[in-house]
Length: 436
Image (cartoon, rainbow, N blue to C red; front, side, top):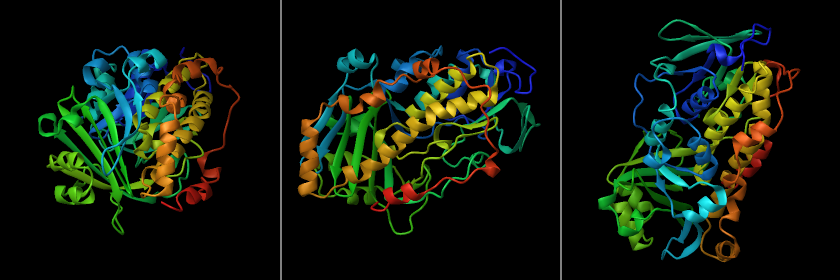
């Protein structure tokens, strides 16, 4: 995208795209922008990039995009290729209710595997595709103001930065979001999450398989799959939250004995797996309504800052990667009109990400039925489905192709400032959460 001195601001080729946050979304944005020939700098408040988080799933919709990045660390070096996905099992006896055959079948159908990774390994893939001098650590953004020509960012340490655009990838607790839209308050989902990484040698054999397994029971479910070349097994589970439990932090600690008690009486093989978890995290799961807007002028939200979603479709990272690929494709299209390009990004991405967000919310009731007629009907429906067709709308989607064929941004596209826009309505959100 050529540089310009027009009132719409110079194109990002001048190196004036500022990305806030060096998580998956922020690093993916920088990686795809640089691949497109657009220079971008990532500003991260942490002083070091620590190995935080646990396992995640990278489905074909995201994997095909990562495959196109030029980095030295490839996804096959960082992930485990699943042979089976969404292997739903009954809580009491492990009966398999539904499973997606992946492996070569997935590659033939979608051109890519479904992978599991440790979050830190995915970050390594992205970091390897970003120039080393394009990430500045210890840079906590304390404020930003925008005008017709750009955005000025201030930081707790170091001088201000002038940018043509700001991409806010600062996560679920985004501080930039308020500059774009008024979000409805988070609502308790009624659930808390448990998480543990367990050495593979400590777990039963069935948990070492290259399989993403979900055990379903009343008001509970548990997921496990291998990561780190099979050396670790990632466990994440959900159970009823305690009254008033609202801490939403991946670093919050839980007690292994409490975790085990939540799944007492389940299949003995699962109890054996849980017994191997000696360190567990526990946090409250909060839900948020989809945002009505992601962009205000030269500021755009991306990833969890734009669409924080419940984890039940395993698409949080995937949707952030799609965001990044679409953003880079649009800004690299050559229009030079940054605000119009950001609005075009929102128009392409918001409907799809919101659909995934809503679909993930719907799985709370689906996964947590008590034994009885509804549960038996659900299990019968599982048996009648074509497993891979169930997720075609996610896996077959090519975000870059969609952006490339959607036309160029409308140079006359404008929108009023965030202060004049109505806040997001929460009426549909409240209805959907009524039984949670």
